[in-house]
Amino acid sequence: MQTFPFLNQRRRVRLTWPWIAAALGCLVFADAFAQSASTPADEGRATVDSDARQQTVIPSEGNSARHGEKPQPVVLLALAGVLETRPEGGAMPSESKNRRPTYLRDILPILMGKCSRCHNEQARFVYNWLDYKTAFGDRWEIRRRVWDSWKGSYYKESMPIANSPESLAITDEERLTIRNWVAEGGLRGVAAPLDGAKSKAERIELGRRLFTSVCAACHQPTGRGLPNVFPPLAGSDFLNADKNRAIKIVINGRQGEVVVNGMKFNNSMPSFPLSDQDIANALTYVYNSFGNSGLEVTAEEVKILRAQPPDPSGPGQGPAPAKSPYE
Image 1 (cartoon, rainbow, N blue to C red):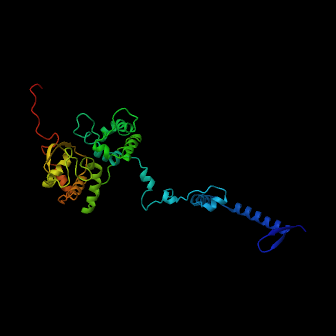
Image 2: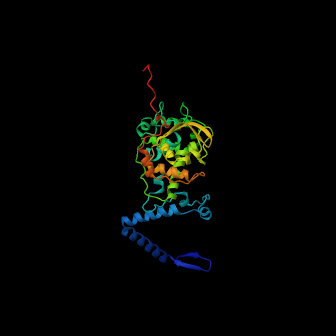
Image 3: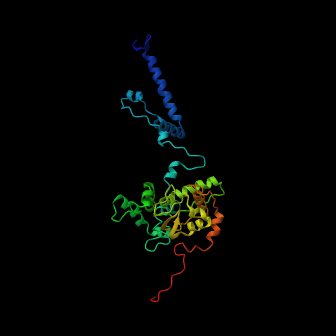
């Protein structure tokens, strides 16, 4: 009878051909029976399990060497952001990053902080980009000046104007957001919902964020302003002397000469399309920062002062000029 030698480390075992044939027959029969009994759901689950094993296996140097492959660096997929988890009741992280930019949520804060010194409601010779209809109509020029000129592919000067405080404050990400907003149709969107009653500390934090995005380009993150250009807010005698005056300036804007800490400044501050709560939060942050008096401003105070007529010192708020005899 023919035999097949099989070697191991301890002894030699001889197996006869009939036994080998019988074992192979059993294996073939069992495999065929398993395939015929499998359901589509089982097949789909097997496919998913196979794919999951392929995706989650991290090749080691030993595994790669055994298969004749060049060892690859070990990469933790979860840390690389490939494997994401959805927070309870929340959106996937990639969804929040890939959401389409809208004017009210994403673009208006950028325009208020980086473009409003020129493109505001009081502007006479340039468009008011703080108004959605106007910004939407001029959106392609906004993109060309903010993105294309900055990249060197448009002949006009880039905006914000080079070496201005706004040009130094605007980030590459903000420029990209404006470009994407225009490319995706210039959506208006909806304003962020107003927050309910919060503690003073929480309102100061909200005010800090608003100050950073809207006010810091001119008044600087330190609150010290720019000498002979923008007045300081840090330890400001003008600011701490009259809270109501400060509120009305943020509501209505101001232009003309002002003396702060003994120094004269003659510039303009536009009015911003901010809610009563936003103004209250921003001023509460300023009053509780930079060595100021620690006062608190409420949305109710802002609402009352908004209903009052503007101070004469604001832009276009003085007495009407006398009519020329030649008119």
